[in-house]
Length: 187
Image (cartoon, rainbow, N blue to C red; front, side):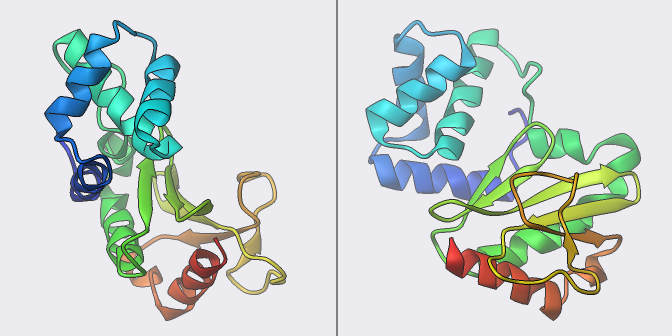
């Protein structure tokens, strides 16, 4: 992760608080294992420090970056998702993350290769730039019938029950945030 966004900086501060170790100490502990495979490093951080999947994933990426000497294929996932044709969608992502971070200190923002998972105790939503003109927000809502812009997730992503399509930061409105807050509270 050569360029770390604000959400990742917050995630790293939370990891340091949870473990009582600095980021450098955590990366050094990963390097000292001699493990080079991502999944094995992730398992190490989960087992050794009791970290969630997303936090262990981020540390595994940072540790592997150190072994490569520079950012490799797993460069900052968020920057990669909003590059080139999709660069104009980044303000939508930024507005969503800023709003969701206000839900509570226990919101975990976990970037993956093609989407960003929003978690509490479990995933309650995900953000994915699906086309050059649209960001899809997947939401896990129990007992809520799809209506209007709140669609059934369908083939979009099986990890969520509903989807909302966004084409501008203005689409991050009270209605969407209400659904996201409900999903957050249920997680």
